[in-house]
Length: 425
Image 1 (cartoon, rainbow, N blue to C red):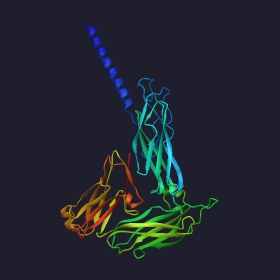
Image 2 (cartoon, one colour):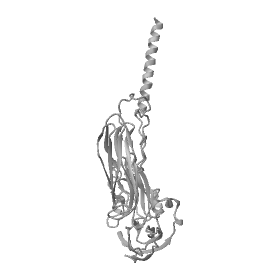
Image 3 (cartoon, helix red, strand yellow):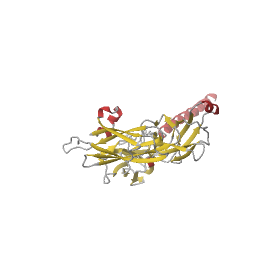
Image 4 (cartoon, rainbow, N blue to C red):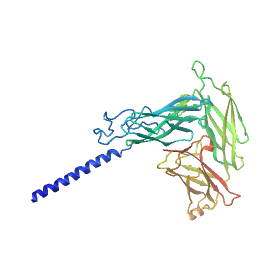
């Protein structure tokens, strides 16, 4: 009798163990989700092919997981190449396709886009087995210059491919362009000289394919009292290795290196001016380069790991994953001998208004002995921020942090920190 009971108990325990192991194995297969890169056109796992003739992506025999939809895509990335920028070529579209090669209905839904300059439509929201849907990707490059790269996301009910990322990329150029779009001096001093470099690139070719012999014949400065410009012919040999690999520079036929110098004397507050370049090009006889910035009444230096204090004066966060957000910090070095606290140094405004900014101040004792004041600025694009691009080059499309410095409203001035970033899926 005891032997019989022992046999029964052992059988029950063995059955439970086997059942648990099978369940754990099945759960591990069902919960796998591929990792997708944003705006890179990375193909989804198993894209364009079936992993098993039976239609079971888990590799098991047909029917073990029941009937399921299954994604197949022909391409996820489209390069429209180099396009001369003009009103007739700024808008474009491309068709991507999703096919259901599974044996159950597939649902398709809008999963978001990386920029307001793109739109897309899905021809069908439900695909029966064997059916194909068209994803029409439309983009507007009217406010883009240089490299264009944007992505969209389509959500599916395929348990192995829950989202599909599509991307387009290319290069919009005018025959002659300025590499930085707009030259900025975000925190200029009324009493100090500052300089910003820029490059002029020419893409024109003669009918035989040789480089057009571009010349900059004259440079007109709208405010010669406060600005000075030097411009010399350059060669690709002087570029960095990263620049030489850039599609933009690979197509350059003529290159000029320039420097804009801001001289002392501008009044406190924002300013904007322009440089007009006159060329020998029949296509582009005039090239306008805009210069803007802000003159601060305080003597302040901005520094940080992602802050470009040498060339652009922009805090560059670039792509920020929506799921995690991104944090960084910069430091304000204030040379004016004022007492700094939440009343004299404070955040005046941020754009967009959901960027989080926190200031930290030096201890009281240190302020009594140190000739400078160090103020920490913690900047955070929070997780789950709205998708969108604040990438410039136009200043109204950059993010911005304005910090007021001064003991009274009448004597305070603003330090402006432009922020370049895009919230992506």
